[in-house]
Image (cartoon, rainbow, N blue to C red; front, top):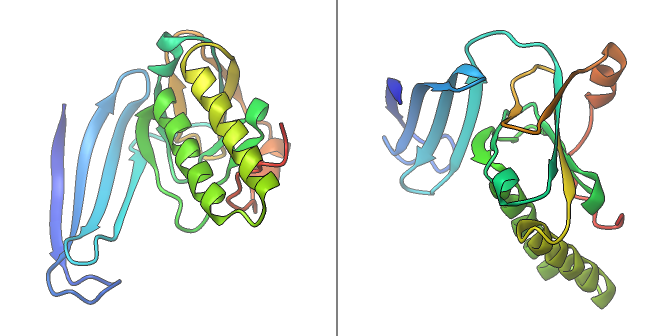
Amino acid sequence: MGKELTVQKLDCPICGGKNTFTITNHEIEIPYFGRVIETTMLCDRCKYRKSDVFPVEVRKPKRYKLIIKDEGDLNRRVIKSSTGYVRIPELGAEITPGPVSEGYVSNVEGVLNRIDNVLQTLIRWAENEEQKKKGEELRERIKKIKEGKETATLIIEDPLGHSAIIGDGVVEEKLTDEEIEKLKGNVIIIDTKRQ
């Protein structure tokens, strides 16, 4: 599927562990997207982990939209680079890249699971019952989307063109210069106030 480019063992910059920090790079070919380098950094001692995906080829800024209607849509491939923005307007979910943003290759269900995991954390940190209730309602809606009982739109925008949704039913659009500028300077957020 891919070829290993490099494996490096270093001292961990996080915990200081001697020769416990491994950096692994793989070059893989993703159908319809092209060659990418997947980088994973992992410390065996403190369990710090970071991964990212970098395209080998230059891409144009793009927006990808998919209406999630059924199980087939849950299996669509998602490539989200560290510069990718993810939105599901029906849930009020927005995930914008920050300094520690990671890239990943997954599928639509995996993106929904990531949002659900963040909601679980927010529910635990909630200051009142209303916030907990809202979080649980959003989790229930995610469950319904995964069961095909509710539809939602997955939107991924990347000003560097390194992210994508691949498969049938995906709408691909070029970002305008104004949209690219608007994407700059955002912070990571999952907005649980909107519905």
